[in-house]
Image (cartoon, rainbow, N blue to C red):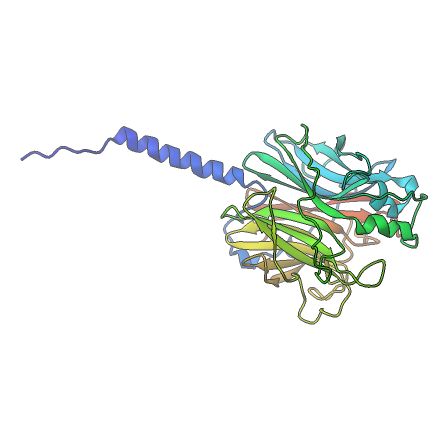
Length: 383
């Protein structure tokens, strides 16, 4: 009896090729939100050992504006885009909460030089929840689109500039901070804004985020779950509110709706009495873990107040310091061996081909931060 094969090898080759294409596209789809580290146990990540002295040219500055934040992503066109906060230097450092705007800069190389392209989220009138200020940009790519999380605020009371935190009106704008998301198909294209925040304060006056929310950081895990980490401030009898903590919320889509986790995150074991423990998160996902780089405000994670710390979580809810928690100290080295006069804030990690390449951070060029910029810290491969 003669048997004939029923296998169609042409179809099999097509199926194999199709599977390959799907795998490639899947690696692209998650952009900077779900990034696999090359040939390494994720728990062994030691960014601190990768930090190099910073060339003086690795500063993004503007003669007219203070620059803060700095969220960087690589586009499909091969260019690097930085979303950053800017406001007039003449208005003083604390004017960031009154009249800041999120702008876009572009470079051929990750370290720069970056050149201003346009304002992405300008002021649009104090009748909008984000009408006076947009700040704290955090960009991510997902399924061919760009999602820009940000803080927006508004106010009805006129304020004299330059201002400080001693002005009670300043706190009106600060306490009106909410979190939004804007969406675009291309960084240089049109950005769709929404007339409501993607994350608002809780109606429960006893909640940890009853007063204000800001400092967003977003990512999408390997199951397609959107994760949004954010600063939260509780209400009390003071104008400034109570303790500053961080929360997390989850959604099936980057534009929400988000469901909040009921407990604060980034809590040190002995830091519950502190006014603030962590700040300025940047998050990403890798092989079932969620990672965060945060500012170690009082040194609970690294022993160095103002350093940047690495925290790790399995579910985005329970967090612990990484095996090597210190990412960079409260003072970093310039290329000539001199130390910085201040700390890096608002971190952003650029990962390419599975390897961290640059750590970006906001930096005050003067002690009073009357002049500020963004700095790109080069990272060598981890041994």
